[in-house]
Image 1 (cartoon, rainbow, N blue to C red):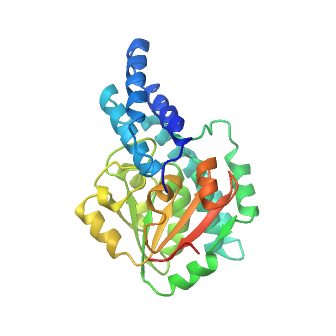
Image 2: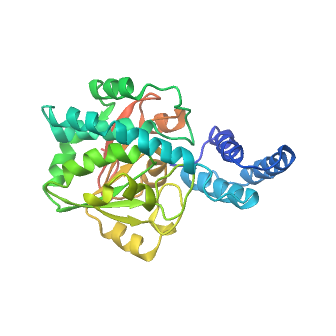
Length: 290
């Protein structure tokens, strides 16, 4: 997926969101955002939105000396999601098809994205019910069940803090019959989950947790450590969670299932769905999208 016209103001908006979380003076913030705007103008449209987002945040983190500006919010959403855990678990366990319901629960968690959306006023409980009761705009569950029969191990690319509690529900279900390797970022960027978050919400109890070895957005193997590259390239089945991971990995020939909410018009159009739709998309290795 390549960067489109409307992605450029979004890069600036996300940069401003991070900058506002700094303790710098108003004058310094203005200086940095102006430099950031100039930098964004140089970003290539033939790169993915995820990669250009990564470059934008990398630049503004350096200029503003930011380490983890979303730290407190990540903790807040981890704790909030953990309070919903028992409810989510009960929804899955009492459903007709626990695995399918766990997939929809995981997709519901993709709303926790501080880089794109303001969810401070969202009623998460009602939102989750709506997602579970609404058909998926793209539903490749039947392909997923077929692929599960062909492998004993799944590589699960995680997305945001808080959201990973919803992923834990699915990972628990999958771990009953499969070995799971969960992937988080090595370094903080936006509200992407890192190892500390994965351990905090208990993902290490149900999967082996590794890091990308980087702080990249979208988790492309070429920007990660050798360990991550080796594991990624040898994975027979990959679950990619979230919009940024979709932006960075779709159309590249991997055997991969994308779980996400289409949270912007550009991604929705690329998927052929409406903005806000829930998607469970299969891209078969070295073939066009199904």
